Length: 150
Image 1: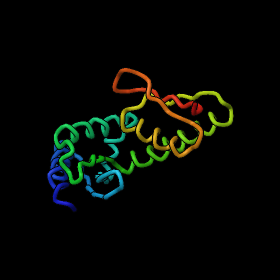
Image 2: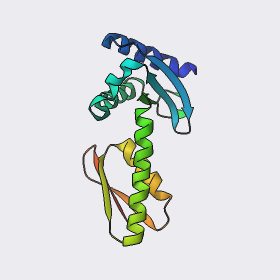
Image 3: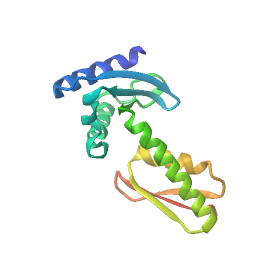
Image 4: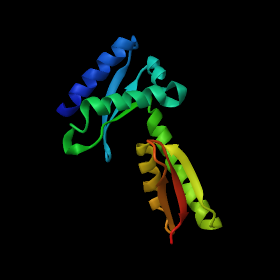
């Protein structure tokens, strides 16, 4: 485990202990940055209610540790690989909608999405030639509009 991850792992260990849940923490390096996956039977608590507790924990880690890791990459917090699975589903949905736009010419929308989710959609749609994306909205959660490239 990289030394830069040690304070975050210690924080998550203390956090889970304060919740009274027994978990294990694994650090995995990915192209986007380090992914910390919390596992164990009781980690299910973090993925309840459509992952809202996990999103809140991600926000706390972002605020507390910022981008203090190597190469200024974001640390991703996951539990039971919940986000990893959701990321795959979101990318597939984005590509499916992009292909639909390409074949029908009818614009599609996906959202509301947080900044991380929007980034995944923009990157997935960029793999489909002939279509473009645009984030629409003023708040933290925005909708991604997929249309034919002009």
